[in-house]
Amino acid sequence: LSREGMHSQLFGHSIPIVSLGDSFDRLEAHTHAAVAGSTVICGAGPLPPAPRSFSTPDERLAASALQLEPEERAMLAGERGRAARVAMRVVARAAEVCDAEKLLRISQAHIDGCTYIGPGGLRFARELVALGGRVAVPTTLNSNSVDRRRWRAMGVPASLGEPSEALGQAYLDLGASLSFTCSPYLLPSAPGLGEHVAWGESNAVVFANSVLGARTLKYADYLDICAALVGRAPAAGAHLDEHRHATLVLDASALVAAGLPAASADAFWPTLGYACGNLAQTRVPALTGIAHLRPTRDELKAFAAAFGTSGAAALFHIVGVTPEAADLQTALGAAGSGEGVETLRLSPEHFASAWRTLDSGAPSSGGDDDGGN
Image (cartoon, rainbow, N blue to C red; front, side, top):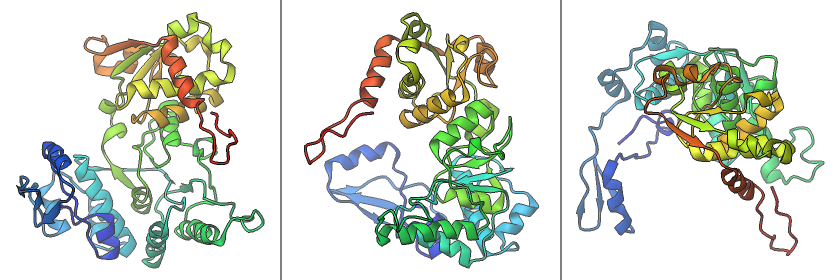
């Protein structure tokens, strides 16, 4: 059971989280389950007990492999304020979950949690403000749920407009910049090759990692602002060289031979991105056979956004185009020979299937067909 989550740190109430592993399948046969101590009970008997439970966050941290610098331990002890203490506990716990051995200094953050999805998110941000929180690195904000200047004139109900505006203001009060964009990579502050950042928003994460060569995980809502408050992120995932190399090769030469780039015009890159994400899932793909098309920044933006929609990987490589894929051997890293790395040949049917998914729609309840891509 985990008692060290964000909810517990900020609001004093813990939410039980149970790691069941293979035993999860056994829950399918039951409609109810209960958590009793470190055991989950369902049906006629208990499931195997969960891993060891720690009574305090400090006890768990002491038992982990995570090594903190003196400055990080000072934040954890509350020497930089209450908000930084809460944020460092959350970031450290995330690092433990990722099996990270240390934290990395980040140069900037991008906050996805400023989109209003309910009162909990607003209370969370306001609580950080009340605790004296202030971002430790330059921080941009994702798009807000409403036009903060004109939502009343646009007829947005107060039940959405007021909390959305308040949420945006809370993040500004924490020191974030007045940006409100889901494309922070288009700002002058965009990170460069090898720069460690903590970004939320899947299209931005994929573009930053793949096209800019910056390094970030797909930071979840609220973890992103915690990273911003302490200027640290777990040394895990796409922050590390070994997790950035391609583990799948996607050969797109057949699509070019079939004339699809010209036939599908500006729909080619987003459709291709969606198809590649769907095939790659958690694997990092290296796309070959299309470097001569010389995709523009806007086309790469469209590819990245669609890739992030259908796939879970935080980056891709396009051989001969993106900065960490001058050639296939470089993209593959230690597996540069390609031995043991699967190669999939993208067919026109892969492309057509992605197109049909993106271009499908259902009639609205009123009978008018307002579906489409």
